[in-house]
Image (cartoon, rainbow, N blue to C red; front, side, top):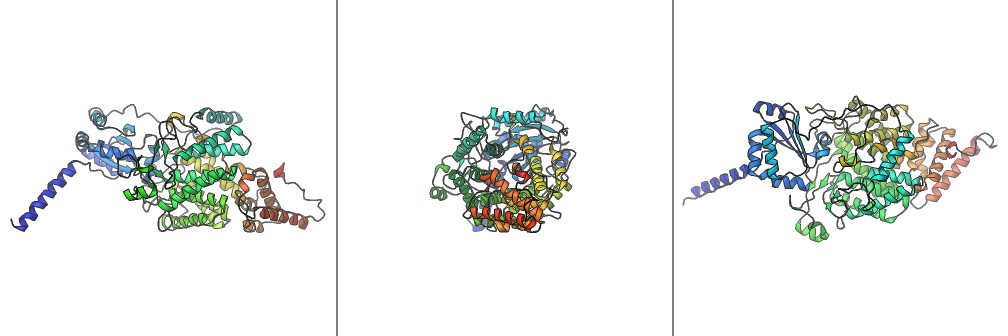
Length: 603
């Protein structure tokens, strides 16, 4: 046979094979506002497959449900099929967070929701659902009217409401299996943070709940590589989902660091260091910025339980689960904040160096005019609130541990950008861009705005930052049965008002001197031999302001000693502060008759 004929036959066979392969797949397209125009023109529905690149059940649905011939036939004939990675689109992820992941959303060409389904759907139920929508596109029972958001008449919690919310946390605690929640278990960092704040006030019950939960969470630590799995199913801590997403890594790292500062238990420091090592070894780009996640599956759709029981060497021999190498500003803000906190309680310079390196990369590659940040290199309908919000929070922590005023300036720019671009009638919306599906306020983000602006007010003394938190006082508590995967419940409404634990230290505001507060705050976690550098702000203040600032530092040390420890030379640092305070008193009042010996803070 002629060689050319052989070549043509081989090409023909490849084309046939390729055609068969195409028939076995759905032609997914990216999300855009044009999908609704396409659906209207072609008389179709919009099927939104909102998943995550790290999600095991998303992989299973892709490999099983969306390979089923009947499902493929129905989608090709009646639907515009759209696939979105939820990490890449915070606006869609926040909108449908209660339904993922995967979230299966069907919309009409008029943008009206018809079906919203959560989690894996097998082929037969999926085909039945798709056909039922074709037969009757009336919205199903999963689509219910959303409650209107209305501002509260109260600017703060009443004592009665505060006690009620405390009791909610106590009653919801799982005494048998530890932690909160009866189906999925993970370290709810906001609740544990609140428990630690209550512990510092002497509450033993909250201390017990926090420490039991911190101990239980260690079951979700990867023994070979470090880092934490996202959560455990079955109502206990022994059935992990093996994906490792940045928010879990960063917030667990931060909470274990703060737990170490409070209780001086090396178990917590070891846990924080193991997570940091995982970030360094797996989720750090060559430039120093942070990647987004690592997949739960080595082979998409195959459960990784056996794989994650292997040693480091045995795993690497079989391969390493996929790393999502997108570099998002929001995820980097989480990581930077956590590493700066770990530096604050350990004094290890490489932790701070890593945080600053990532911060500088994000500033260079994701910053926008006016102080905001893009999510990715390009944002379809951004900017998104979370990127600027969590970079602002990271900058504030960097300022607190370095006393570099440039970081504080960036926080103020970020808050101004948020106020200008994201405010709504009530609260702050997720996306500032124009989109067919209008963005809405999301609870956790608005809580974050309240905490950041309250902190910034305490750091600077500027009254305009107190005008932002009241915008989010409408935020409701979620009930336990509404808790979405990977998101907070229980403590959500509490943390907006309690401002814990950072603001529990910084609520005194009798003296309107910003330089006093700015200089005092960096000593929140530790007072090392670098304390002289930490007082740079006081050198710029008047002598009276410096006295108040020094007394504030010593007050924090006396009332919150756990948050003011670490490092050789700490005692010498505090002795230096006391000596400077005495010298200032003698300088201003040699007779000792004008300046009281006790700060009003100590009353």
